[in-house]
Image (cartoon, rainbow, N blue to C red; front, side, top):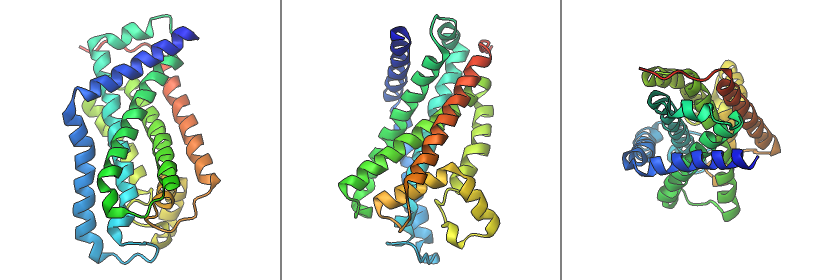
Length: 256
């Protein structure tokens, strides 16, 4: 057990240190959603009349922007796993006398910490423009971002174990995660959507993250409850099991 914990910690630490040495990733992961939020929020704000918004489209769109940061961070973080396969590092880790669950936990936890840090950085930068959030609300938002980052990082790591091509990985992630973001309520509330879209939003785990963030940050009236936390926690558990199963299926071959 102690050896597994140490292995997981080393992998998580390696993930964080590698990120800090690539400052361009910080600019890309935070700057792109921030620019997207400001341009889209300012450009479309006057075109949308949202009865459940408490400060216009710019404020309503902010929780969705935080989710975008977490999503981007999860995708970029899992790419390092594909690079590790190409360099042969991952093969050495997987054949070591360490539980696969510890390997997965280290990669996922490292990605979660990075996703949380980047989303909190955006929250600090944009806080003067959204205001209204109380200290308990900020704590709840941070908890929601942590759980969301954990789940999305686990999903990305699971696919990275099975995909050897970075362009192929990007394609799969865009096909899977971007629609999840669209149906989360980031751009429009479920109340104004068609019945089919409302069903899709109810089945989307990120919609529960968005509801919690909106509630905690006060950007839109929402009815967040313990059910939302339970769904998000279940999403974390299922995502981690998926990543663990992908890691256990085979030892990836070194890409040439």
